[in-house]
Amino acid sequence: MAGTAVSADDAATTLAAFRACTDIGDDTARLACFDKAASAGGLAAAERALAEARVAQAEAAAAKVEADRKRREAEAEAEALAARAAEKKAADAMSFGADKDRADADEITATVTRIVATPVGRVLFYLDNGTIWEQTDSKAVRENRILNTSVIVKRAALGGFVLTISDLGIVHRVKRRR
Image 1 (tube, rainbow, N blue to C red):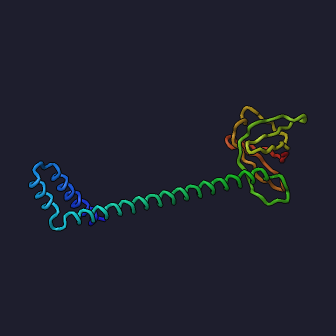
Image 2: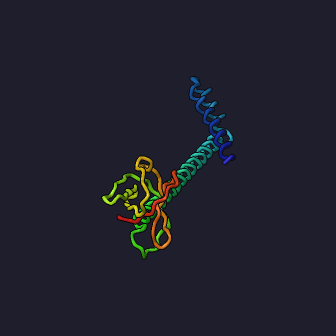
């Protein structure tokens, strides 16, 4: 590539000499200028150097196009992997606790989007992943402290579940309603 750059510079110099000859008004002087510029194969060398430079530029452009294509493919693959991971996480969250015989994840993390009191004094926790968990213990629930808060639902002993309010460390026993 360095040799091509030098040849391209030489070619540019030779071409500049030819262009300078076109400005000469006297026919004899102009012809002598062209003869001098073309001597020792200057024109042919300049044309070869320019052709080599064009080939090098075309190869560099092709390499850039290929690199861009590979980058786009890698980005698309990364996006597809992230989408599959998000779908799996959502599917795991939706199935978590729904079937006692199913061996799914041990816990999920979500955000409380809504809290509804039941007629028997318990609370339904609506989570942002679409699941609903019903409180099974008799602890008081302070709705204003829990709404829009991150929670972790974990498997407990004997097949039950506990909902832990992450920021407050409050734990409630729950069962999956939906």
